[in-house]
Image 1: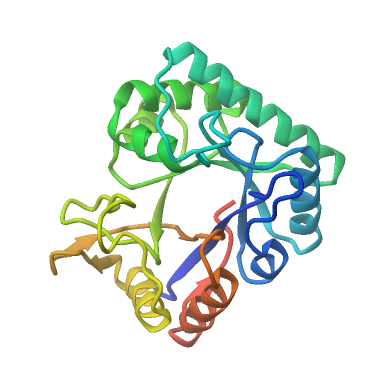
Image 2: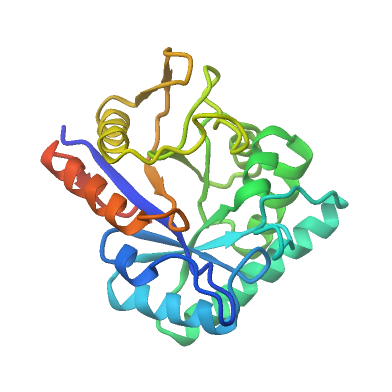
Length: 253
């Protein structure tokens, strides 16, 4: 059986006069685009340009929902009642869906961003509040998350499809969790190392953790961050490496 995986990137993270990442270059590589919905990054015009460009290239569009934290780029956890988080996620889903519909596209999946992703992976209350928003908006929308985490369990409880995600350019600990960005080895930049890890994850469902152990990362989608230096070139190298290894690249939606 030929191995297959989706390549996703976090896109649409510019804001006003500030440009973050090379979205157009990444859209030539990825099969899914997780588009910021205005809370941690992005604005209506950035969202429109990103969705339109993705639709023109046949790239699936996902809602990259986050905490309301523009200044911190959504990488700071925000304590709030579950009902407020549900409402905030619904707000972001509705905004992106309106823009997608107007540009001949649709929101095909949901992926939490940054601190919301990590908090929902560990906190069952946050995970349940986030999944409640997805279920209320469209219970058929899959959610990208780490396999086996609290978000994964909340999706199962709510009858929402969870899609396992792995990260080619991030370090893992022995428990299969992402190494915090404040710790050494959290973000990987060496092209050869990232490509080798991507192939390993796609073909064997495993990756080497920071302590040298092997951990399972069964995933249907692989994330390539769009906001790191040289992201587009790194993404292209990963794509080429996967193809050389016989891995088929295709969207999961």
